[in-house]
Amino acid sequence: MDMQAAVLRGINDLRLDRRERPEPGPGEVLLRMDANTICGTDLRLISGAKTAGVRPGVVMGHEFAGRVEAVGEGVEGVPLGAQATCSIVLSCNHCPACLAGREHLCENLELFGYAIDGGMAEYMLVPRRAVENGNLVIAPQELDPTLLALAEPVSCVINGANQFRVQPGESVMVLGTGPIGLLHVALANLAGATTILASGRPGRLEPALEMGATDAFDLTGQALTDEILSRTDGRGVDVVIVCVGAPELANQALELAAIGGRVNYFAGFPKGSTAEMDPNLIHYKELVVTGGSNARRADVRTAVELLSSGRLPVGSLVTHTFPLSELDAAITAVRERQGLKVAVLPSESR
Image 1 (cartoon, rainbow, N blue to C red):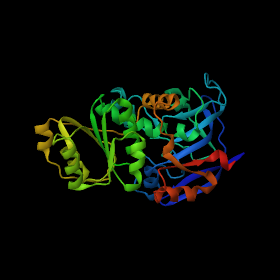
Image 2: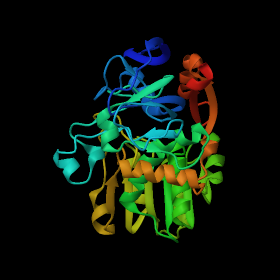
Image 3: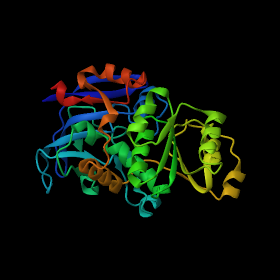
Image 4: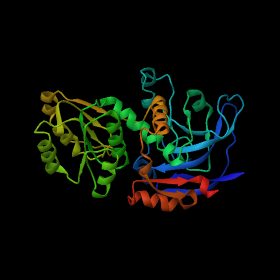
């Protein structure tokens, strides 16, 4: 039996191919895919802007949701038909990063949708090592598949948020109102921030308000700095989260932070990027500066729990859906920023 799969053959060569449907061997699990959301990183993989850890011929897709179709010999506690997703980071568990509790920064990591065949196909095999590592996550209750697919970006945002930990009553500035910025707004709201400000494109300001922002601006540069300092009586905000990989935001984030504040560079910046920064802003304001990359298995489980409980109502992020058979149209929608989040639905292709 064969299946449809989105195969990345090379730079700017993503094709909808027919492939043999995988069958689970000992210790493996086969998922029937229901949804796979697409992010900006997928566009970078296609264009060749991101090549590290990418295997030519891989099935793309790292934000996925499916159902257990079959299990291999020796797999226990994984019921057929259960909704499931995966932590996409397959770690080695023995490098210094893994031993320090940062398996998401593993020196030998492999990622679903990069080196391991991902979810942009009708079926996806979860390898034995991933099952044994605990990468497979069963949803505790029935969810819209496009919502469960968001567990991957939500888990990354959770990892980032754990670096600066918004406290009740604090103020937060989110730079960038793409899907990741909107998720940071939603998490800051859940954490109890009383002031959540966001800056971004005009068409994405209303969604920021819907996610919990107290105000949102189509401002950049000095105009944005002046607005935020004016609103905070010159103090700045407790937390600044950079959700756009624009080097000019690196120093501006420090300017917007209050004394004792926290700045998180969550966005990935173009390879080789440099930025001019005033180190005295960190020194004299005693700022804490952090980053955030990928997510731990525990973060994925937390994300699934939050989405299942309804405490993080972010399903409205998915504004466009396409059957897998219309892959090109789905990729175009993402590239042209149509709506917020685009999902392909392999189940509809069947």
